[in-house]
Image (cartoon, rainbow, N blue to C red; front, side, top):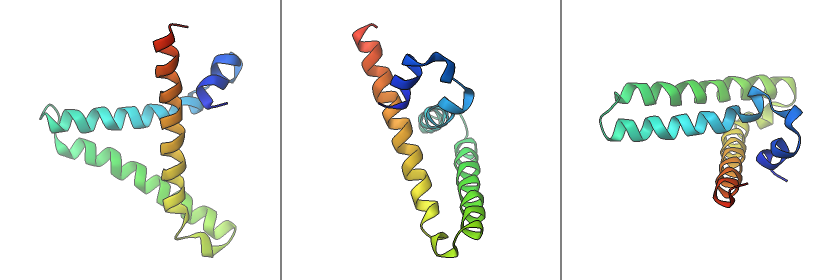
Length: 102
């Protein structure tokens, strides 16, 4: 059903956490664009990326120690993949919704 469609159907499910990943990736893409046209310093975009990667790594280590250390090297790859997929799906459905005019 997708996160956007779920939130469209169940407005009570709308929380900041429900759109946090999509908002983060939109902000990151915007900052990367603004960096490329020299409107903001490169360090700003790198700091955003570093904060995200650090949080993914820390969370991966915590989960690995809690469950099974063999997942320590796969979790830092899996989490960004899932996050990017969730954000991509959210925006795909959002733009589809806006294009229809619903």
